Image 1 (cartoon, rainbow, N blue to C red):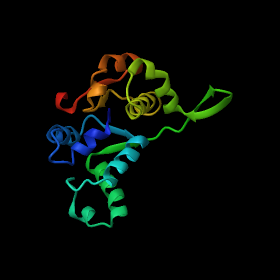
Image 2: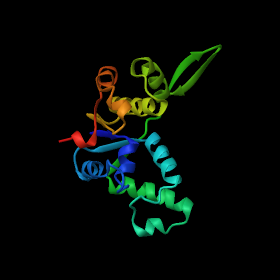
Image 3: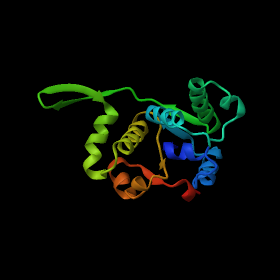
Length: 172
């Protein structure tokens, strides 16, 4: 099973994107099973809410009123790409300053690996989600992304989180 980064999803529906062909090819394969997180859902929705007229979506989706079109596009992409939405609900308790508070597990995991991985917050959160999903819900073999920062830390990610990262063009 593979966790699919949002950049691959957007590219697969953007014919002008240099990643378009490899993203489409990867998403059209039945295997591996493709997993995304609640963060992917929120990020994809945010991307689609910005100006994305070049996205290749069916006419009925394009004709929806703007607010409904965004949600319809997300639903279409999830179904068309065969995505499974995994959602981990859980918290960790941390002590910061003078307070002890519960925070989402993926935030705690991202923070604990930040010093090793040195990635942007959303990248860390996607990787933390994938790591937790792999431990708690679906056993993931891959983290598929075109993000060069993540791909540049492949060995550190595998060592810290047990996830292999690959660009969709390098998949068999």
